[in-house]
Length: 442
Image (tube, rainbow, N blue to C red; front, side):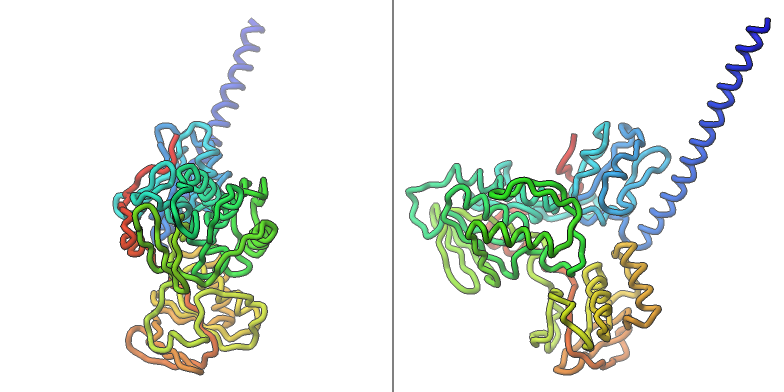
């Protein structure tokens, strides 16, 4: 009898303990779900809930809510756990790291491009990265995968593939012309050197492509990658300048020169070769690799005076700029970060944004820019548009009514870039609108 009573007490205690733990678990899950739901509401209000490009999609039937995907994601609040399942929160902040895809223990995550409501234009490429024009290849961000590691790998693989089909008997100045010197273009240049190709790399701006246009303090999230003629590159978190230094050094050590500030305007096919027409010259080549990114050419305001020397579309060496009257135009992360960096250098900074509030900037940037505005370190002009740029001032229209004129010495414009769709179509490359197609799945 005593043994039975003792067993009842033990089992009863274990049962109560289990119920208590289960209650704590359910209570915690509900609390976390409520937090995630509030974040989703905020994301929808700010316009960051809907993805703009590559993003994770969770199979809720397979998801076990381990949270491994959230821990692996280098970006903040792209994913969260709601009702025991992973879900997207700020899908537009995903930049295609694929860390969540790799980390999921049950393969419940896939990476998709575009959505049913918002399509993304992607050029047709086969598994060898060749487009619908035989001899023209594409690698990197323009193909839909924006992660630096992916771009580096694609640039390398594309050159490996095109080398195999290179006709050594064909007559042309070059075996290969690479257009763009971002991660994919640099990797492709190194692989072309390794493969003994006669090649040329053209860049419309500066070495690094889109990475070069980041403000100096911008953190570039990467992961270990294999860089041709260099080896294993282990940079999990680094600054833009550190990453550029690596690229500069590896190119220099392999005697590779990038022809900067030379924009490719046209590519013409003649039988089995191509004529590449740039802003400075004309070339003939057997193969072409496009690694131009999705940003394309910086978008311009299209106002009188925009061609003046004081106007720029990227921020270079802000630490050398002091005591200037500066106008920054734009409302994205690049514009906000540039404005904050310039204000730190004792400049009189005005930030002009055509909308009434910031909608797509990162939480840390939102917090910092609001502090700057409240402290009068940045003069914020919402609902404003630039109408004219003069030698010593800028004219703006507020709320599409009042016109004001402010003293000005420098203008920085960060309003995005023109997608290179028209250029690709002119070349003859077929482009499709992707509405939620899986780019990476288990």
